[in-house]
Length: 97
Image (tube, rainbow, N blue to C red):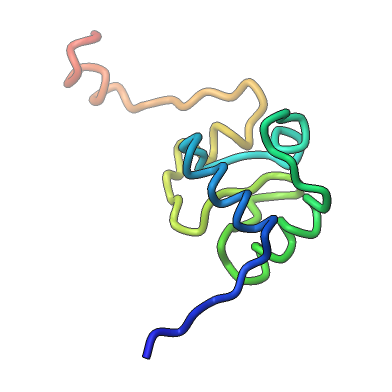
């Protein structure tokens, strides 16, 4: 028997929105400011999805999908105007240097 997970209409909307727009990492404010996403209780929806491990909280107001694990992207997302520095060997191997 397959276990079915019941999700709310707002959770369905958010999952569909993330799928359609290929969103893996996002902030609360980005979702709130998006005109195409109409969810009345966004904060509660995110909290519920986090509690059920559909999404993970990176830090306050920043989230990613439960299966998103790219540490470089997450690190760059957390650091405002951040950069990722690669070892010299990677630059040489790629032919940039």
